Every structure is written in C-alpha cells, then in structure tokens.
Image (cartoon, rainbow, N blue to C red; front, side, top):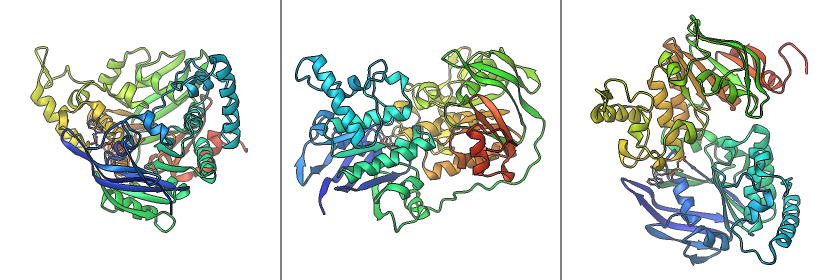
Length: 507
Ligand SMILES: Nc1ncnc2c1ncn2[C@@H]1O[C@H](COP(=O)(O)OP(=O)(O)OP(=O)(O)O)[C@@H](O)[C@H]1O
C-alpha cells in the first residue's frame, strides 16, 4: 500500500487549547479519506499544517515516504498538495484563466502565456469533467463553478493530493452530486483526496476510510463501507446521537408575522420576490424550502430591514413594520440567524463576549449611564457559551476570528435564541455544525415553538425542513408555489414545488 501523505504525532497548541494532540493520519494513493470531528475538534488546524499555513509544535510529515518540512503554501504546492478552502480565494473581476495562473511565474510574454494557459485549462476541464469556460469572469459564474475553478487551480499546479474543507456546505443538492462525480473522476486518475465534512451521508456515499477526531485526538480510523452512520456519529461525539426530532402536536396561536403581497428587488434590479404572501403563527415552525438563490435571501433581508421593499406590507403582531429600521425590528421582537456568519453574524475582531451583546450592549444591565458594564456582559457570555457549547481557547475574551467555523455558528445561534424573540428567523441555522450540535440546535428551535414563539426556518436542507417544520412554504423564482403541512407531504411533493410546479398542478 503506497502512502502519499503521513502525518505523525502532530501537536499544535493555541492560547488555552491543544488543537491537535499527537494526531497521526495517513492517506493512501487513490483513496478518499474523510476527516470527521466535532466543531473545534482540530480538523482545519491539521489541514492548515499539511498545507503549510501553520507549523506544528511537534511531529513530522512524510510525503511519498520522505520526511518533508512544509513552511508555506508554495512549498505544499511544490510537493503536490493543494487545498480548496471553505471561503474561496478568487479575484471577482478577473477571468477564470487569470485566477488560475495568478501567483505563478510567467514563463514567456504574458499574453502568450494566458492563451496557452487557457488551452491547458480547457484540456484539464474536459479530462476531469469540470465543464469550465476559461474566459468567463468569476463574478458571473455560480458558487459551484467557482469551486471548480479552485479545483482547476490545484490541477493546473499538478497537485496529487487534494484537500477539500467542507466543500458541500455552499452547494445546492445538484451541485453536490456533480462534485461527487468530479471527485470520483479525480480518484480514477490516481489523485488522492482528504475530505473534511460533517455530513455522514456524504462520507458514506464517497469516502473509502474515515478518521475520527475528538477534542484534538484521533479516536480511530474506520473502513466506511462496513461502518454505519450512527457508529461514526457515536465515535465522533462520544455518545448516542438522535437523527430525528421529537415534536409533540401543537395548535398554533395568534398571528405573529403577516407578509402581504410582498415584492422585493434583487441586486440585479429585477424582482427577487414577487407578490409573496405568508403567515406565521405563534407556536409554529414554518419552514421555507427552495433551491438556493430563489428569493430566500431577498425575502429575509426585507423582513429584517436590511433591504427595502418594492410593494406590499409586512406586519408583526398586527403592526405594519414595512418601513421600520433594523434596530426597531429587533426591539419589536424579531431575531435573525443570518445566512453569512462572517459578514453579518459576527464582528470577527471583537471578542466573543462583545459579539454576544452586539444588539443589546446599550441595554441594562450591559450598559449604565452610557458605560459598558464588563461583569454582566461576561456573565451573560459565559452562560450562552455553556448552554450552546461554544468552545473557545481563551473563553469569553477570545476573538471571534479564532473560533472554529462551527463554534462561530453556535455563538450566533445562542445569541439570537437568547433574545427570546416573538419571531425567530433562522437561516441555515445548522450550516457547518456537527451532528451533536445539530441535534441540540434543533431541540432549541422546537423549544421556542413549544413556548409559543414563531419560527421561520429557511434552509437548503430538505431533511431539516421536513423534520422540524409544522408547515412548509415553498419558494421558486421568488414566488410562492405552495404551502403544505409537514406531516402530510414528502420529499417528492416539496421537490416538485421547489422546481416551480405549483401546488395542485401536475408536473
Ligand atoms: N488561529 C487560531 N488562534 C487561536 N485558536 C485557534 C486558531 N485556529 C483554531 N483555533 C482553535 O483550535 C481549535 C480547533 O479549531 P479547528 O478550526 O481546527 O476545528 P475544526 O475541527 O476545523 O472545527 P469546525 O468543524 O467547527 O470547523 C478550536 O478550539 C479553535 O478555537
């Protein structure tokens, strides 16, 4: 068995936390090795070490049997190691070719180089089934296509080992299928892949082996074919995990949110939401299902005051809030778990505790006579961090930037649920979370509902929508295509409406 990469006894410490504690993994030629671990388990840190972004405190790395020092990404790349990060690193107004050659030494005159680069990109794209147009501009192509550009960037540099960091969290279901096919092509051509993911279904579908990490330590490596999803989940969190949500039947109460004939423009000056009407009552979870980019973002921005509306009305508990500002709406009882945690959810250079009072820092007891009160803020932060299991090396004063992706998400969810809003708008609340945390957040959302609050759940995960919702509204091209009761529908019916077939019409 040929090992392309071996990481042996790797240790990496950050202030207050051992992120990798004598971790060893090995990658065999032509396989997909999944790395599975709770949020903050140390997966990204380990891969950043392999890619030369961090230096390990102890341990060593072998590539194709030879011990190597990897001190920066250029060296990693020269050793045939490439990485697709969670947040792409592309220049938006450059062409795909320009992005791919960026940072490489020009060999001949630049124009000649670009032409031959484009030719090679076309060949690579054809060979691996990537379907990329080298002349397209990044800002004009979909997220899925941008990810393929990142893959091509690695292939262009002759990478043999490809690291994917949660690659499907930004993709639509169809794009996920396409990516899996691309990964299979890569393996067929002799590449080797390390895949970081929380999605057990994906590991089952595509990986050969899976190394499980918990709190910085390797728990074990299993053969994926002969290990069930629940076994892997148990290894990861150290206890049984329930994949379904227990929910008692409940009669919804008074109207909390009324959306009347709402139209909202999208960025491109076309209507992103068209004549949309919907009601959400106290004590219910209303799931909004739709393929990404069908008006969900515009709708949520209109509801939270981030985007102005074109026509129609939004009522909260009977009061028209259509022209209220963001803070007025928060005060009126709306909380919002946003789609983009790094852009809208957190101020990355603030501490966790300051992020946890982002909307409430001027209220008592956090401020008195215009001065911030550290003690109450810290106490509040510690409580949310404990309730929502937010793990941070230096506790409440840790910069949000130093939190793992999943812990950033848990901090936002905790902050918003803690506001105890009449209406919680939760957009992709479990994105990037491990199964243990998903179970917990789902329970908290159901708890909100059981306490008579209204929850509008916007998610691209159909399973999540079907599991949690009382009723499901389906949006397609900015229009409502149907509203169904969750206990009277299934994946197929909702899927059809997501594709634009109106309720009651046949496909
Ligand atoms: N630059 C840094 N400075 C300080 N602490 C860090 C830094 N990077 C990571 N950590 C800490 O190291 C631990 C491991 O983080 P890492 O990002 O590797 O986890 P992960 O397994 O990738 O998690 P997730 O699934 O949530 O993305 C976390 O506790 C995190 O807060």
